[in-house]
Structure formats: C-alpha cells, structure tokens
Length: 377
Ligand SMILES: Cc1ncc(COP(=O)(O)O)c(C=O)c1O
Figure 1 (cartoon, rainbow, N blue to C red):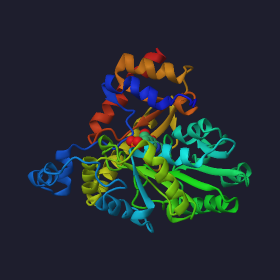
Figure 2: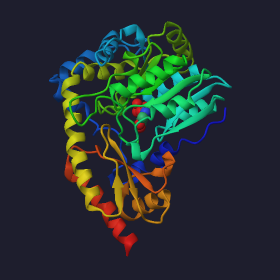
Figure 3: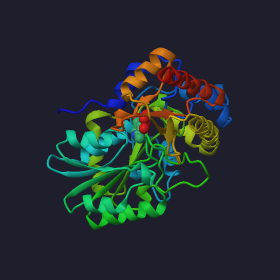
Figure 4: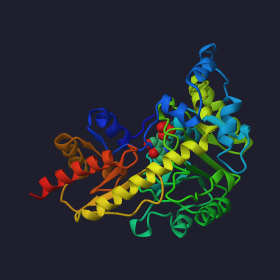
C-alpha cells in the first residue's frame, strides 16, 4: 500500500537528536519516573515492588482495569468497554482510520493538522476533501464550509481539537454544530484530542465521544501527561460494531500495550489533577514568553494559540520554510518545524512547552532571533 511520506515525523527523525534547543517539541516537558513518583506521592521502593515481581506476560490484552478506569475519568459518559488502548495516539489514529476507511470512500479532513488524518485515508483509497483552516478565522472550523464539503457519501470527518500546529480550540457550540453536520449525513466524526485539557484557562472542550453516537476520539499519554516514552494511547467509541471491528484489526498489529507501560500510565492517571496542574503551568508561562518574543520581532506574526503546545509562526523573509529551518538548526542549533510540513509556506511551527524553565525557551527563541538578524544583514 503506497502512503505519502509523513513530513513532520521525517523532519523530527532527522533533527531531533542533533539540536541544542528543541523548540519543535510538542510534548509538555517529559517527566522522569522519579518526577512522576514525586508528583504522585508514591514511594519508589513501593512502586518498584509492585511491578518487579510480576511475570512479564502480555498483560491484560484489552487494557488493565486500572488503566481503563483512569481513561474513563477524562470523559463525561465513557465506560471501560468503550476504550481500546493502543501504542500512542499515532497507533490509535492508524487503527481507527484503517478500520473505517475503504477504497472509494469519501473523507473530509481539516488542514493544517497532523498528517495521519488525511494521508492514511488517502492511502486506504479514499477521496479526501480538505477543509482549510483559515488564519483569518483563527483556524476554527468554518461549519458552513464543512456543510458544503460533506455529502451523504462522506464516511468520516476528521478534526483535531485542539489543533496541531495552530493551537486553535473549538468550543462546545462549534463542536455541536459539526456534530449536527455529521449526524445529518450519518458520517463518523473522528477527533484527535491528544492535546485536550491543555488550555490557557481552566475551561476545556468536551470530547466528540461525549457529544455524538458516531463520534470517535483518539488520545494518549504523550502530550498532556508528559509520558511519550511509554507509548500508550487509546481510541474510544460507543458504537458496538465499530468497537468489534477495531478490536479485530488490532489483533493483527498490536496484541497488548505492555504491562509496564500500563502500570505507569495508570499511576499517572490516578493522579491526573497533579499532572495536569504541572502541564497547565508550563504551557501558560511558556506561551506568555513566546507571545512577548513574537511581538518584539517585526518580521514575525502569529495567531495566538488557545490551547495545546504549538504555534504556527509566520515570517516575511523571502525564504522557503525548509531552507529557513535547516539553516536555523545548522547555524544556531535551534530546531523548529517547517510550515511546509503542514502545507503552510513561509511559517514555522514552534513547540513552546519543551522545558519547564522559561529561560530555556527564551534561549531557543534568542537563537532564532540571532538567525533572523543574519538573514536581514
Ligand atoms: C495531533 C497529534 N496526534 C497524534 C500524535 C502522536 O502522538 P503519540 O505520541 O501519542 O503517538 C501527535 C504527535 O505529535 C500529534 O501532534
């Protein structure tokens, strides 16, 4: 099966381990096991004791009861048998889309967003129509435009809330209007919610799975919970037939998620409030630093992100974004992601939550400033 190269992941694969300032990181500053145990108030010897004597079997194939309970706690109306654990949100997105989409299907996806949402359906043989998120509309889904693209033939509508790379957040009213469109055409509504809860104030939007009987959500421990290293994600649907189909496809490529990863994930989610407070503190303090920097740079502009960890920052230099970003890392050691990975020329995606020390972020931004001074010289 032919699939397009995953531009953002290829860029990160090439550069992530070679930079001094990783201003491309999309996870909230990852925790160590020590920090996690400290945040959860759990004694290290006690935690290790609870896992060291376990036989390393496949564990619970469909997810441990503790993990499923922790995941359910993040939603209004989800029960453990609605949840399917996967290897990260990447695994969840791939599982959902490859299960739902067949050759000849029609899919509508937003753009810019995480490329899985349109390139996997395309690889599955679907006709994919793109709903461009407009900068002038703060990258919010224009529901009238969505209405024009969706037909009775539309199998899946793909959205990402909050959106990567723009940081746009759809509120409950907009989500309900999108659900109305999906329901009228009997389409699945798949929403990648890997940055959900990571807001700049204490409100956050509901999950599509709590709003729509054909809503499917994907998420993971990577971003909000700072645990990308455990490769644990999930998809959720309340539709029994889709659940069965997802589990059937999953048998072919996953078996189980690994009991060590599940033990760490369950511990984190049983102390969700402590971790969320840490993550929100980091994204709020760091976004303020990013915004001050953009405002001080006359060649840059941005739509202020409302949530998540990323911002799409535009520059007005006559230089292609791959060249801008390659030279930036080679000359100043700062890694950002070319806007062209998201089909947004003359821009860069900045991940602003890569450290809990705003000084580190400022150093990365200063490196970008030094590079821009060279461009101007
Ligand atoms: C929107 C979005 N979905 C999914 C993923 C994959 O995340 P995970 O580490 O959970 O596989 C990412 C990672 O950058 C992302 O930004």
